Image 1 (cartoon, rainbow, N blue to C red):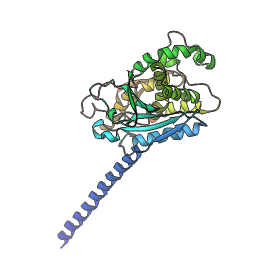
Image 2 (image 1 turned 45 degrees about the vertical axis):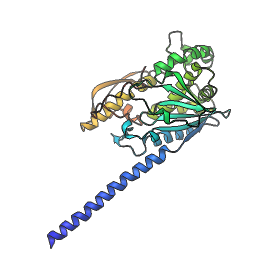
Image 3 (image 1 turned 135 degrees about the vertical axis):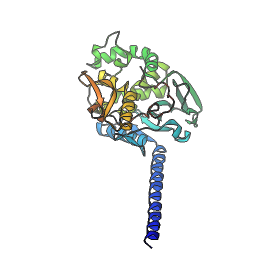
Image 4 (image 1 turned 90 degrees about the vertical axis):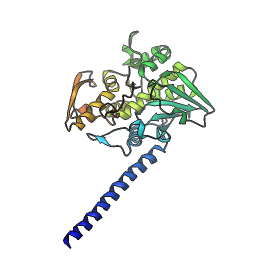
Length: 331
């Protein structure tokens, strides 16, 4: 009698556990699909540090909904696990003149792949040639699709934006104290100011699409103020201070550069440390703080790691084929 009861009890509990796991996974899938079917929006008109903070958090929430974590940080999905119909998050950006562009952000890596405005779709070249994102699923209501002559890497964007940056440099130097130190040999990215007004202008540059060099400049501003801010709380904090009525535009310094160019490295080391049930890294990552001081990051206990809001899936560490070069963290 006792044996029969135990068997019956085991079967009953097994069914409860199975249904609990099944419905938990179903709920997470529902949350993910619901989030990715929403269109986020942000307007520079009357923008404040608080509205920007809430927008970036909403962007993070949609990118990471239902995702597993590594040392408490959400890990973005493998491309194989995302249906084409759910591959991109759409974001509407509107400026003070009422011009709106619709950005497409890849949920696998938070990269901007293109945008639509005025019935036209503009798509960045893909620099990971073997693993192109399914951009054919985007912007079906656009009457014209234009493939831009540059990719989304910072090196590609910098080359394309150089003419526009050189044209705007005297004005930026006059307005921004940080920009006043720029000289002819200053890298293009370090000559591009960011802030509320600069985002407003970037939206106009993409909306009007007057020239490829202006579009590249607009992409650089928007990518850093959206994608990079979503990845890193420190970058969000720097940008947030420029959402006031009066502010000094933000210029890309060593602190921002070191984070932007080491996101994939940080993602890799954090995930591999968890796989070993450890906190230490296999190799040191060199970053810089806001005072431009060199800092070595060797552990998930570093304050730099606590400022990472999402991780790129570590394909190599999970025994998958290499994913090819990354876009925005490639210089």
